Amino acid sequence: MIVRHLSDVPSVDWGNGLSRRFLLQADGMNYTLTDTIVRAGTKSRLEYRNHLESCYCIEGSGEVLDFDGNSFPLEPGTLYALDEHDPHFLIASPDEDLRLVCVFSPALRGDETHSLDAGEFSSY
Image (tube, rainbow, N blue to C red; front, side, top):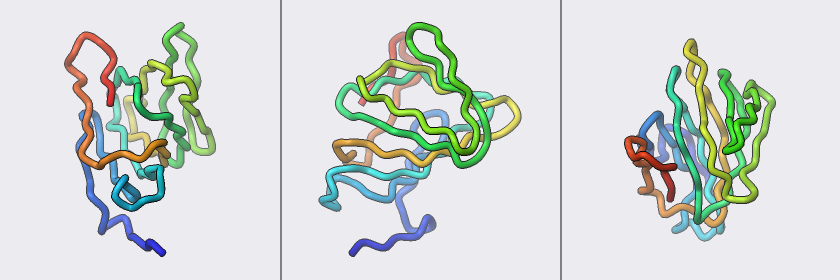
C-alpha cells in the first residue's frame, strides 16, 4: 500500500505552475497522479506525445482550447481527457489559480518539465 500526503510529495515547477506528483513510474502503478496548480493569467501550449492525460478541476477557473480553436470552460467539477495526444492550450483565469487533479498514462518518471518558450507545443 502506498500512502502519501501532499506535503511529502515532490513538487515540480513545470513552467506555468506546480505539479505535485503523488505517483510516479518507480511506484509501479503504471500511471501518475498529480495535484497541479496552473498560475493565474497563464496560457500554456501543451501536447503529450508519449502520455494520455485526464484532468479534473477542483478549484479555480480557466479554459482548455483545442487545436481547432474550440474552447471548453474549466470550473470545479469539470473533467477533460486528452485521449488522442491532443495539442491544446491550457489557460488559467486572470483572477485565480487553476487547480487540477491529473492522471497520466503511462506513468511519468517525475522530473519532466515543459519548454513553454518554444514556438511549438511543449511535449513530454
